[in-house]
Amino acid sequence: NAGVTQTPKFRILKIGQSMTLQCTQDMNHNYMYWYRQDPGMGLKLIYYSVGAGITDKGEVPNGYNVSRSTTEDFPLRLELAAPSQTSVYFCASSYLLGSSGANVLTFGAGSRLTVL
Amino acid sequence: QKEVEQNSGPLSVPEGAIASLNCTYSDRVSQSFFWYRQYSGKSPELIMSIYSNGDKEDGRFTAQLNKASQYVSLLIRDSQPSDSATYLCAVTGQAGTALIFGKGTTLSVSS
Image 1 (tube, rainbow over the protein chains, first blue to last red):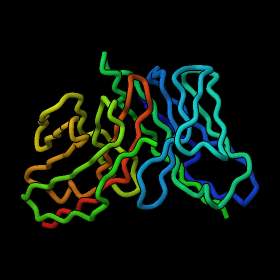
Image 2: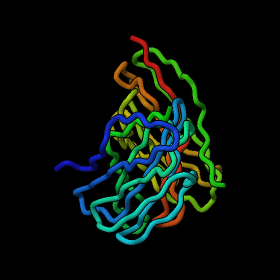
Image 3: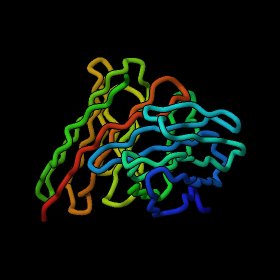
């Protein structure tokens, strides 16, 4: 059982380049998320999805795009990389826990992106 | 803007002591509360969840929730050097909404 798999683990981009961070989960979770974490900071929500075909913006969506064509995959696209997007990116998935609606997240190992 | 506030620390305690980590949140309709532990260079891992007022104990960990005060805390008893990590408080609002994280508190346990 792989859980949440992110690729690549490390990437260096030049300003203005584009790339896609891949995220796949094999737990049949409906909910998927992308967070970014800057040094010494907590996690900031970029985008999330409550199911295939449905996505919504989080706290810091500018400069990113997502799609959710299948339950398993939730790629994050950076169209014009900027130094401010240098960060560690975490993908996560979750299920709803009973009537409380609690989202118990399972995280991927993270992708470290540097934009120079 | 929904916010989750934590003291960034570092919080330093000797081995065997009780470590107390605190978190406040701004959204009164928040329903679910979590503590994640994150070792340096690793992804966060869930250590405690709490949904109703009061205390919840799991081994050396106790989570405390006071919705009236919009306050949640984590106590770690008999702290060990292996507990040295950053502890992230996370809060979700209404059912199905995404988690909002605090900046985390760095805990250092000295032997």
